[in-house]
Image 1: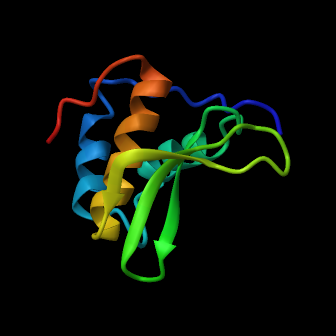
Image 2: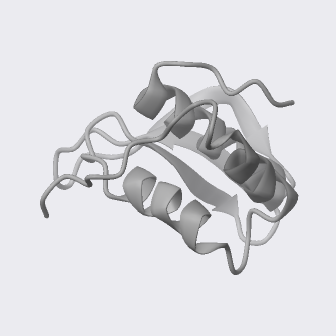
Length: 106
């Protein structure tokens, strides 16, 4: 898959990060969907992901190796019992990886 031509503008796209914060699961605006497609289309090596460790109860942050068959590296201390908070944590990490800047939202 060719790289996306869309690039996140850390200032102009801040309202889209707020939109995701308010509704991380479900339908999103077309502009927010562009950002999500960019994040989801990034190379697998070093990509942050969520791993469900207890169905419908607990998720843990992990990093993909990019090597087929190699287990996801689970990050200690990054366990979530709220899926929306877990999704927000991944969004912030992927934002930083894509823009080189921390997302200035709680």
